[in-house]
Image (tube, rainbow, N blue to C red; front, top):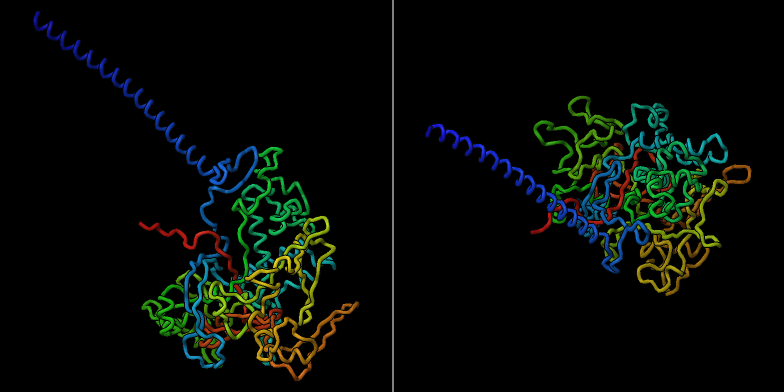
Length: 579
């Protein structure tokens, strides 16, 4: 009996334990749920608090980006997006100029200390395929079959006749180099400095057009389906007067997903610089930027360049590789000697006799290809023998011509239309479009912008402190009058020939050569710097410090180009914070 009572007691105790555990499990679950709710609430409160703090003005306390309206700004912007084709170059101080022996004795690249801001640069030179995309866009938007637009397409075409040689056969390159798929990834040549600038402007508009579409500000695929001569996209026009973009086509401008989310409210329909969506423009690099990027990071610039150890975009003093795996291989494409454009066939060959496919050789420490050899490259600067580092040693650039938007009588900006395209006749007789439909007319800045300014006092600064009367040894007065007539012109330091080219009413080009015997120079404000050795140059010109010049409206078979873009925001990218 006692045994039976013991068994019953044990069973009751086990039942009680199970019941107790069940109750505790329920209690723990409830507790966990309560704790979870508290955690989520605190998290949401913290997020809301941070969000509120981020979207609350420290100036007024007002809410930023309110749905009701008011000040709109991208408070969550993190980092400038690296645009297509570019790599990041962190800026810094370096010794610009040549530190090797100046065997040419031209004294035009004396060493000087410069500081360059961070920027982006094309990984490779602009290729034939990239340029053909540009030509294809022009052909679709401005059909050359229309006499009104023929000069636009013709003005953008590279000069393929640069390949011709009086005593050499090169018709194969004339006919095939630009368009044949075999040369698709070869650097484009036959492009003048002016054409390179126009390509960069076109590229800026196409990339920003894509960004705005992706962000929902423009109708999907409008860049393909809705573009025409009188309805296309321009970055400056969109920023200054967005309703005039695409010829005022509201179906495109308000057809993005962002419009649908806003209903009929106009807030946020158009992007501005404050949104962070619109990218800085593509452009040609300055001479200082190009040289800085070509030198790379392989050595301490200031110290080792002064010692003469940084002669090429790669390490060492030789043009052949010293690494065991590729020992003896050429590190660039250049002319190795008289009648020797590639070396002896086989082991000694550099792999190219004219230009080479981009990325055929190893990149420098920045990841940039062909910063020596292949083709020389246009840079933005106007050429002068001396880099005026005493006046400026920060982001040095000679070539500033300041302009502003042309304003109509009603206060609106003047937009170029199909019927108001302005054409220019270059010194070689080629006709180009100065501006295209959809762009804003530009005029020189005047005294409204320059009056009592200490940093600039005129629109055109290309010959500032070098080549104008103020810097000439003949200057003997304190006025701004440079004189008139031939006598005054001959006293200028840079007195280049002045050829005259005009087109009469029948379309005939009238050329008048300058036959004066008083000309003293080939340098003028239209001579642009080009850098880097090419497939046609000897080893001496591979040094990044070397600099030469060429007329901005002419082209050759050995000068190409690559684009750059300014960096906005922080100097560094992803650098760790200091402890």
